[in-house]
Image (tube, rainbow, N blue to C red; front, side, top):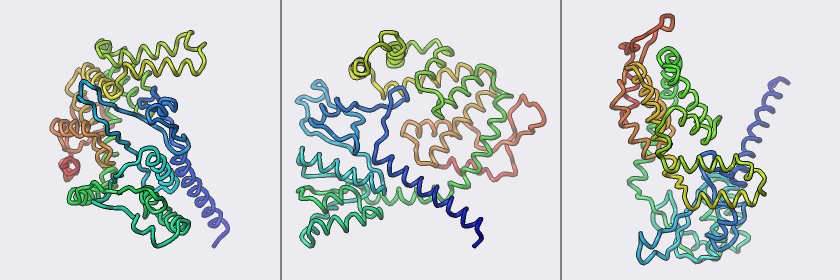
Length: 381
């Protein structure tokens, strides 16, 4: 093996090791989510109040909570349910998951821990009698590193909690999902290459077909989707393009909070005072789920108000469909986006497009009759 090849292999190995290490660190030290970025996190003090005890931030954070009101349920329910995000096949993340479960079960003894990816009784506690605790921990950690055990199963093997691990999957639906996933992964690479070709064509057409206001807003939306613009910044841009922005309650409230942050009084306040004021406003008034729905509605209304020609409308709808298709292939569509995808699929002509880039165009690009309508097969979901 030549010296250059050895050096290249060492460099690649070093990059892979750093990548894997960064992944483990990211799960060991959970990401702090910021309200201004479009998502949220319950602060540590509030999390302690919700749980009744302090959850170490090195293993987990409380992201959200919901308690039914007496007007919704009378009498109000007394059962408390904890929903834990599962970092699949990540050793440090699964170890943290077992620590969180251990703390929760010590504070709130529960008969059941419900699991995804299983069906019926999945407990491993019957194996405890075959080996002492230190030996069980040693063997269980090996399987945890290999991704063959979950954090909940690791805890069940190595603790004395009297808890039943119970899988909640419908096996027939579960295997249908696995089959669907396999079908998607078979087509994914080819599909993405095809979609990238269409995206490039759309990108070329936008400056030629979109009016200046529509092109400006489209560019800003792209930056927002890439996190180059904050939610507050993007909202300001939408407000300048649409008079209807003031009719949305949560968007108006977010704007007030932004003004509060920009005020001199806010800047002179201590970090604790800032956090208390901001959280007080958010917890009492701001509905984050409704906020994102309002933003989506305002965005759709604003874009549609700027579509002046049939060419613009057709290109805009095709652009939306391609974006939704990519999410579909990545299995990251929300239920609302899937409904939107079904609507867009009916609107857009499924034929692929061919454009003569040397000539200016004022009409629709023509469908490619030599192509086997691959996009049609993609939209068959």
